[in-house]
Image (cartoon, rainbow, N blue to C red; front, side, top):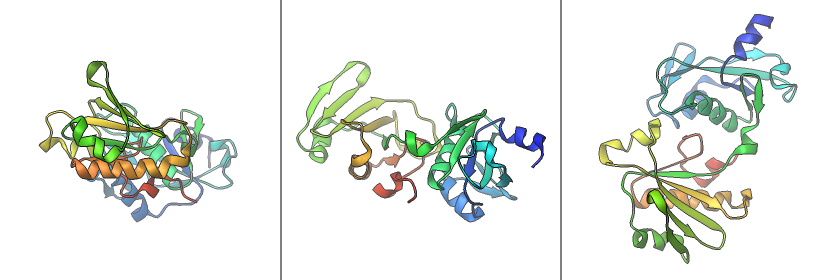
Length: 229
């Protein structure tokens, strides 16, 4: 690969993958972030961003962290639904395909920064509606409409939050104001990730919401939060 081509790949968010992704698989993954994602020639277009077809790159793109590198550059083509959503797309794809994310020369392993699930709800549930799903918890109402429910191992936080990601917008026809539910592990470890995912899906099902990961990719099972083996 020539010097100019390598420089082009470094200018914006890029998913650096250990193997060339199948185009249909890449589209399937991106539909988890934008249900309207579609093929456009060899590329995928999702949420006003173009995910370019994978090109072979040199290992120095990721500092030699991968022996073989296939790079999918993400380029915004219009106003992004959320700030840095092009980077979200690159990191979400890299996470699901066992790769790394590169942005302006900075290499990130998404598997090391994954924080777990968020639930986006079209209607804010009352505390007594939510508690049956949470078990024994301490309930506290804070400022600015924030509520917390703290149990032995998990903390659930309800926050009124403007979220204009494509998955959040699927709820907007039915929503006056969206509420985001963050499900946190009190010890900060990942051993509760599946438990957190199961609770996120239960809350989403109970209140007609959608469960997503931190990059706003929809999850359909707790295992969707895990990086590939």
